[in-house]
Amino acid sequence: MEHDHIVKSFDSDLGRLDAIIAEMGGLAERQLADAVEALVRRDVELAQKVIDGDARIDELESTIDNLTIRVLALRQPMAEDLRVVIVALKMAANLERIGDYAKNVAKRTLILATMDPVGNATQSVQRMASQVQAMIKNVLDAYGAHDIDKADDVRLRDEEVDLMHTSLFRELLTYMMEDPRNITACTHLLFIAKNVERIGDHVTSIAEYVHFLVAGDLPADERPKGDLSSQTVIDKV
Image 1 (tube, rainbow, N blue to C red):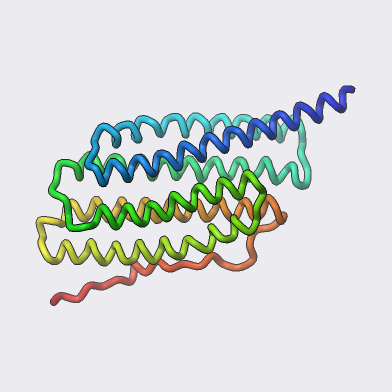
Image 2: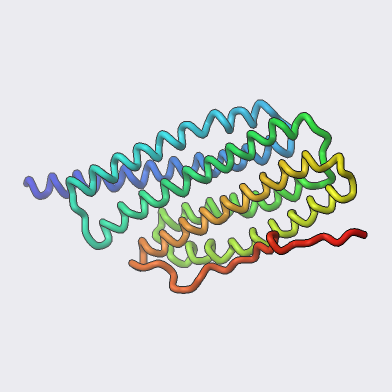
């Protein structure tokens, strides 16, 4: 009976980890969507809501930290059970960073809302963010279903986000060259674009941990990268 009680308690702990990760993931996905919507609509109230909402993600990460320490100390999990605990800890850290980047987008939106729009830049950010949002949803689905194929597909799609970031980087440099009055707004947009690109990187890390959860090891090949913004030069016309 005591053994059955221990097993049920352990299963309860693992189920709680899954539930918290699902809540964190849903919040992170919503935070990014709201941050970008606030940027496009120049909605300072929504941007402030995103900034304020980041505290809940931080709180959930702290809960995951405490619960995983408790599980490791009391249950001493092994093999697949140990992977479940480790992956939950890693995912929580990555989801917390996604929340931070979404908050950073919202903070810069408060400033950009006071300036004139720059070309179609916000729409370009929105397109890139839509790709990343889909990746977040898919990687959370992969985690819930232990679907290694879906996780690996998310990992490969990060290259598309990198390419979009490079294109947006060039677009913003062009706007700045065409009119120096765009420099301040474009600088904030450059940081926003980088924040979205970094969210894609964190989603890719989560996909790799889902692969580890299912297969017992990380992907053997290096993740493909397509971000060439550090090498981009715009020639004067």
